[in-house]
Amino acid sequence: PPRFNIAPSQPIPVVINDGRNAVQLFRWGLVPSWAKDIAIGNKLINARAETLLEKPAFRTLVRRKRCVIPASGFYEWRRDGKVKTPMYAHRKDRHPFAFAGLWDVWHSPDGSELPTCTIITTAPNSVMEPIHDRMPAMLDEQGMHRWLARPDDHAAPPIDVLKPFDAAKMTAHPVSRAVNSPGTDTPTLIVPAASESLFG
Image (cartoon, rainbow, N blue to C red; front, side, top):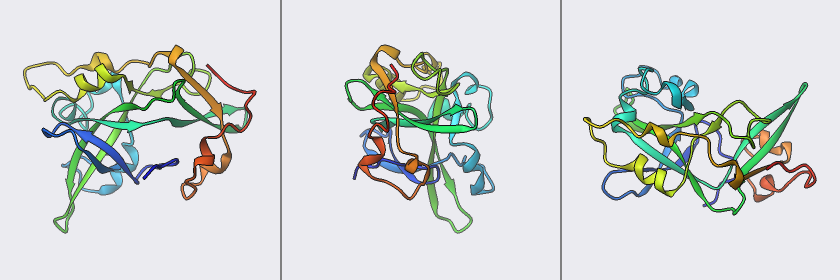
């Protein structure tokens, strides 16, 4: 079913290359297979593209466990002094896209398995720069196929696709502060709160 307000620790749709590229539900917030405590997932909801090959939690996964997270938009909060305004960013043509991500499966003490993921971020484009100093790595169709290509231990990961999305194809607008409540999940959340205050 459509979701309009997904928060960390909740399930999100994820596609991995397991021969079928089928959509599955993973917990948002990476818990590496070697982690001792599930709580680490709260700190690993995002991964910086620039340091994927350096960080212990990501450098193996970027070679073997890449995924994409389909989406139609995302929220970011613009700070105006002490006021934080939620903004909804999306493609101008309203077409869906995909975030680049990494995934892993954590084995809990009771023996159950928990598939988790993180969303990769990169530098902002000109639409997002006035709002935040980072943005998700949004992939076009070609970038998505390259990111999902079967892992090859002898080939460098396609890090070059993790770049700011074309600003000419994006826009963002302020939305209701009701989005601050994870329990609120309705289509009204993405409706412009002030149509005269559009970006992009």
